[in-house]
Length: 221
Image (cartoon, rainbow, N blue to C red; front, side, top):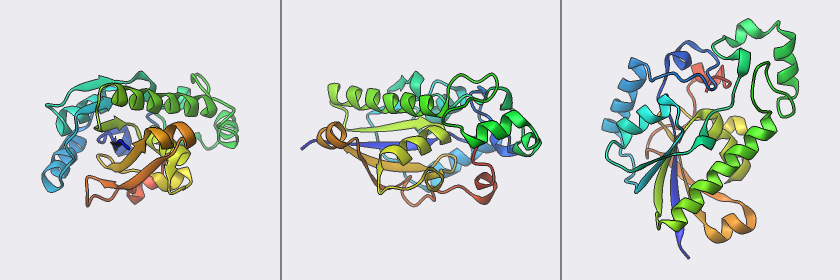
């Protein structure tokens, strides 16, 4: 049975991530610290060799691919774009606490959208599931058995909480910038059960869990 490996990697740090703001679909570049951290990770750890990089089209993901996989063929996947935070983008979580619209969204984010946003939590989950299906089909059709997926924290956490074994709630799949998880897929497991198997952190030896600063603001992705 042919198996396929995907290395799910969160983009490097942006200024919005660094200062603790909601980022969402704001098209921010990597900040200087984010670039330096990625270069340090690349020097300290070994990122796996891949045949293809599947990447969110937002700048921070493209720039991360440029640093980690500069010589690898790249496919931009529109459905990997982060959840839109609408009017909440660019704002601190603490400054939104008294906003009734913010509280309403927190109470039922699967059904509601932030003001000015484009999709509910349920629609976001459906979209990123479609992205994974598109990537897997592209891999099987083009005989690609090892690939990197460079995307956003919310996207990767959503995919892992929905499809990964072992099962964990979304918050336990938090990922530090430049890190992630290697997963294994097979046609049988995916088509029959929609399961991906987590093999371990990527790069090997890197801590995939968020640091305390980012854990305090899991919505900043």
